Length: 137
Image 1 (cartoon, helix red, strand yellow):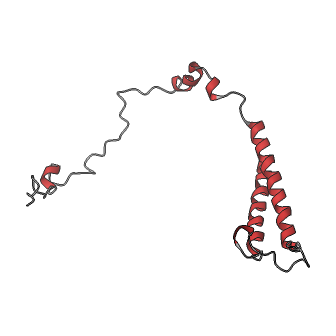
Image 2: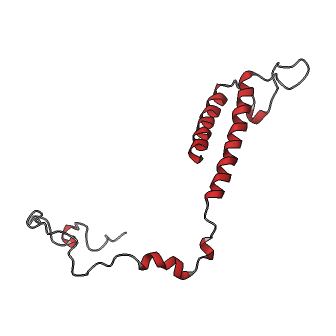
Image 3: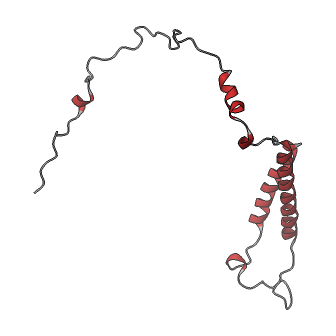
């Protein structure tokens, strides 16, 4: 059920983005400015089909958001992490398989990797900087 509602939610979100981007700008930032020539003497413009579709998609988006919240709340565990005792938290770690310390976990590669003799052995040998900083005048 949750996957179906989530799919519908995503489709509504994409549709809402598309419809909002298709709408004509009414001028002015954040709703400021004149209302256009939609009404005879009012500042409110006539509702277009795109604005009605925007409202329908927005209402559907809000409904699916609330539905997903309710579904997630019903699927949540009843116990809080704060209410668990120390023994209940440590129990999964105690049941982990024990590894014998004598077991070799890294395979022997033999002579597959050989260090080169041309490279310097210590990092100090690669440092070309002077040992002391130059004196400033």
